[in-house]
Image (tube, rainbow over all chains, first blue to last red; front, side, top):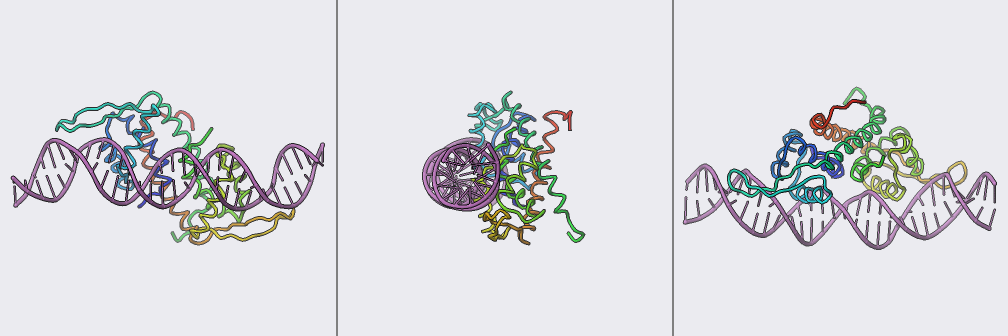
Length: 115
Length: 115
DNA sequence: ACCATATACCTTACAGTCCTAGGTACCTAG
DNA sequence: CTAGGTACCTAGGACTGTAAGGTATATGGT
């Protein structure tokens, strides 16, 4: 399944923030986590994730720090800030609104027997 | 409440298609219907809707026809096509995937006291 | 020693599109 | 005759996902 560009964009911020609420993480691991969480349905490219992480950092939603993996590779570790937690709750409210609005209409599309 | 730009974009196509499943309609009325459905939470500008309608028409999801209102003003009436109905179902599947993916994480952010 | 693969990060060129701001035109009410 | 609602459209700037490419290190196979 290929998720629409707009929907990918809309998921991006809340998904990253929610993953960082679980635990501090880094770019490459976040990409794996997203694949894992969606059972492969959502595939992000690193070309979209890294600019997003920089943007979230600039907005103060996440904090960043250089570190080193056990194998000796450099990693940029990200953790969520208080502002980021607040933003995540806000995003959640907005998604609820979106689902409520769309939800009222989905029903009328509703599948006739055939599928 | 101000809905995020990305989420507005993600809602746009399914919302328009779902409204046109209800009944044939036209631009200005769609704007009102969206406000109504979201209880004022979602506010679209006509500057984003008309290009969207043209795009959906170009993609074959909707068909258009000029008409006249009872008061004598010209209107462009839109109706959904078979391709559009299929696209709506596809969008619905994608939203379900998005909600499933995010849903697994929301829980760890906070416990929803209300709603 | 050599090469492929995985890990790990970053950037640019291109294309698509949302927002702001403007434009056109008609009708009703004060 | 002015203001506001109805009704449609478009142009320019800004943003961002995609695709593609770049840098660098570690591991495992041959």
